Amino acid sequence: MKKVRFGLIGAGSIAIYRHAPEIDAHPAGEILAICDIRPERAELLAEQYDVEDICTDYKDVLARDDVDAVVVATPNRYHAQITIEALEAGKHVLCEKPMATSLADAHKMIETSIKTGKKLMIGHNQRLMAPHIKAKELLDSGVLGRVFSFRTTFGHPGPEMWSQDQGPHTWFFKKEEAFVGSMGDLGVHKADLIRWLLGEEVVEAGAFVETLEKKDENGKLITVDDNAVCILKTASGTVGQLTASWTYRGSEDNSTRLYCEKGVMILGEDPDWQVEVQFANGEVARYSVGAVATNEVQVESGIPRMFIDALLAGQDPEISGEEGLKALAIVVACLKSAETGRLVKVEY
Image (cartoon, rainbow, N blue to C red; front, side, top):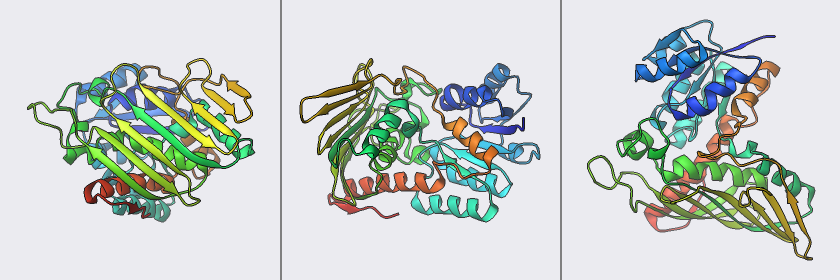
């Protein structure tokens, strides 16, 4: 079997818990190099997967002729730069979300992918989770009719609990590294999910994007948001709420409700019945299809598998750069709304 040979750029938690194990588990996946500015992290991951080449400069990975593809799993500010250089070096790229810190950079990434003929995929894994796949199937079947409104939420205690640089000094809390906080970490996931579930684009947004509690290593409020509550409107007139939070105590909330013409669909609230449909006529349908992935419960994201399979088939990945751009555009519109205090048109 033909192999897709990878270089991992970034050896933090997302590489440890998602990318590395899922690439290694794929029959055609092989990791040849691991790069991180903290060499001890690269060494630890390399030992686990028997990788000989570790480095602290991503350019060393891009210089290898035997690396077919790279995973860009760095702080957000470096996504665009590394992705563009990797594409120009002849590598396919799987980039973590949010794909860039500006729409201009996102467009450059897409343009470079087209120019070089190399594939670009963004790591939006929410649409690959089993409950969401089932929900999409039900919505597309028409059994619930038109979706009038929705509520989608992603909240947990904060990235400093999960990232490798645990504590208030984490790069997630620094605007110069992250660009955006809970909206980039969590909200962008739900932005991608809702437009995919509904099969249409968000055209207008209003939002409160706030920093309420999280403090840095100096005891000062962090320079990115830790809470966001957003109102979105789609092209067909569907309206709904997207919430992202780093201050949810207790268990994670990674749930979605869709209020439809013929009933309500509830996703990710019941651990036994991950999809529940309450029909207007009183009937109830429940589906046990597998869990929504959380920081607490790791299940296969499906992202590396989709990427590798697309490369082997010579096809564009479903979650392309264009898809990543549209989710980022919703986040950018929400930030602009919060800054101006006005409703904002989503510009792609």
